[in-house]
Amino acid sequence: MGVPLAPEIQKLLDGPNYAHLATILADGSPHVATVWVAREGDRVLTGINGGSLKGRNTRRDPRVALTIVDQNDPYSMAQIRGRVVEWRPDPDLAAKDRMSMKYVGKPFPWRAFDDRILLVIEADRARYTKIPFTHAPG
Image (cartoon, rainbow, N blue to C red):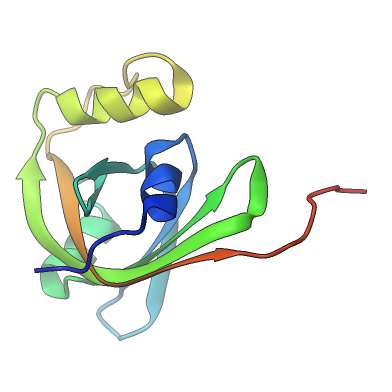
């Protein structure tokens, strides 16, 4: 059983904030990709093609790490370390469509994938950080 996610982390996951998913390549080096995320209780979901590098990496080694940053305040962020506990089929893209609505306001436009799955991630460690800076790009 994973650790509970703080309300601040839940809020980041529930908003249209991008996450960065790190998986482990066969040679032990990291692979990082930007992903859409959703939340199911204290578990993190992300929709992928099962045959993708993320899919292959997590089937070989389920350990992952995620960072997520508030799109309106990049000094509000979370770091999650955990593992994929389920590779859930999403053949009709129902879950991916819900994520797509959150991020782009319409169903997911790319429908021609054979092996659509959700990575279900359980956190072993989760930390929220709010740095007291004001985002004011020059």
